Length: 446
Image (tube, rainbow, N blue to C red):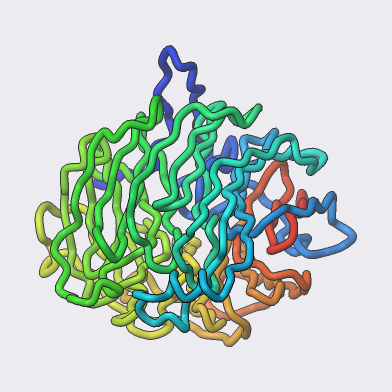
């Protein structure tokens, strides 16, 4: 097998007493420690009854959450953590000042102030164990109306949890108490609010910072938050700064015995050595920008969506070196590419839910759709897979479970009647789901 892959979740252990995270030989997750879980694939190793999600009879608890955030929960099996943001309304004078030099001001929301929150909850009871106010932002930048100031998903690293809020700051807290261990600020103008989630790679956190003012990727020390390396992105053809931004979350793989941090951005997808930031390979994917979905590794290919503009699904061979745009693209699909929901696969097909509610199963060999079905609604949350069942949820709170295979077969459909934009996660045989107002736990063990 010339390509071996696994998410590197073994933390550095030193005097700072950072515990080790692991995935066992059967691939069963010890816990869901970062966005998309083990391997960044959104695949739940346990056989869960996904139809329980949204079923009032299976609801274990519901906890209202202060503020707004689209970050997904993360958990170590005992506690779970989320970020949130409390906004105050802006005056007309504050709106005018904030939008004075903003491109397309009619597509931006303005807040008078923003309070950034980190929250830890007990998994069994759903009770808030602690809530930490991290910062008060008096003149926050405008964001897109569909975004929040707390959209990046935290990362669990032993007894620490790292909360990232884009250019507003990154905080490492004690997961048990909420006490601050370190903070860092990676200043970048993300134009429509933060989006990229940090991902762990050994001793470092890999963070993508693709703004309208500058584009770079960094490796942050887990020990103290210092910048271990900072790598600029390749030059971008587009002269409009809005076409240079991106919000994708890195995918960390081991390819041919070497680590890669694969980070799509505007025009380019680039693989970096996560230990030092050295570029390994790059591919010019076209003129796509605002790339938000996380890449997916399956059957020796990295499959990713190119975002807005030149919107495509692209599959690439990650074994190259240098600029391999002409040699390592295996296929492109220009129909039904998602802008926000990430991809998921059962190893045979890639399942794609577009923002507009078109579900498609795409062949890995040629990128051609095997089937399509209109689900309806608007989608941002990424799907999860357990066994041969996939769960998707839209903005209106409609939750659909369908079977994997060569035709569309719906298993169940429920409505929670609360907006859903965060991705669900498993814990202890159950499923945790965040809505705009609250966090739920549903009993999903079979």
